[in-house]
Length: 462
Image (tube, rainbow, N blue to C red; front, side, top):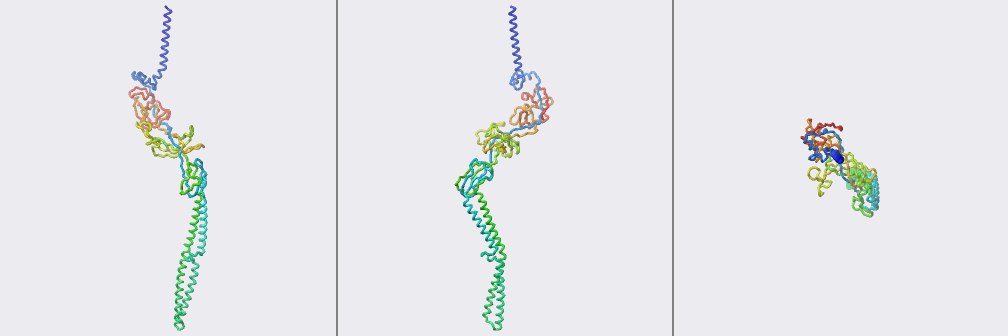
């Protein structure tokens, strides 16, 4: 009987010990979760939060002041490799005799793309050389005064003629005087006097014409020489034009790049001057479409990183060389069937972007127009007002809620506007001052009428 009682006591003790061990284990496991504000037990009907309020136990809380923090905000954008496309014309009207390149070939400035038939060009060039030689010969004849068409512009010859006529006039005058004296004396005939007078009149007329010719020759000779010189210069210009035109019978690349298209074939006749024969893609850059909210952050000269689908897993350093500050529906817009996800404004929004052009460092790799990818641009915000992330609740559409603690330990719910967010801090753009104290622990569960014990912590990071 005594042994049976001892056995019953032992079993009871064992049960009690096991029960206590289970309770201790459960308490050890559940108690941290019971007190943890992030667990569901903390906010349950019998949770630690409810118990503290019922027993009027003061909440332990830490408060910090806003600090000046540097943010590196990555801005993403998708885009495509773009290029300048050069249209290379075929100027002469001639047959295509030979093609030197095909689509996809890489070319350098001055490289020959095609040859044209130069038969007619050589004939035109020869005609220009002959025309120049004729003009120079004509200039020499004008200077010598041997051109028949320019007889009135021979001042030396006309002066000789004038001198001769002057002497004839003098002789005719003497003859008239002689016959006049003879007639008075009755020794001469009236007919002879009249004949002498007629000769004098004719000679005087010729003399006056010669004087006029001398004046015209002296005045016109410089102009004749100038006309001859101009004819030579015109012939030289014509020859130079034909020499320059002859160069266009070899089609050359105006820049380095890749031949995108060849629009002619050997044997074809270029019948319209200026027809496009080749298209060359040159001057590669990455053109990204970036969300309009970053238009005030991105500037020329900023560093970036470009990732291309063609080179998966590889990043290319890049630098922004141009920002086009015009917002468009470049990512779909009215042509899309559905808008993008709501961005916190409460209504669906269409994508609105602006363009950013970046110069990509290829590291020797060959990039091609049309390659797609995305860009990451780090926009730094230097020394802006910020609070820890755990101090802000209800982050939405650029607004959030913080709990401000006054000197008496009273809580005040305050709405703030935020900017950039990283792993530790939230940028505050409006709603707080540097001197405010905000709760950094349990701010989302506390009410304005809760009793708290505040531990004010000075921030170590400025």
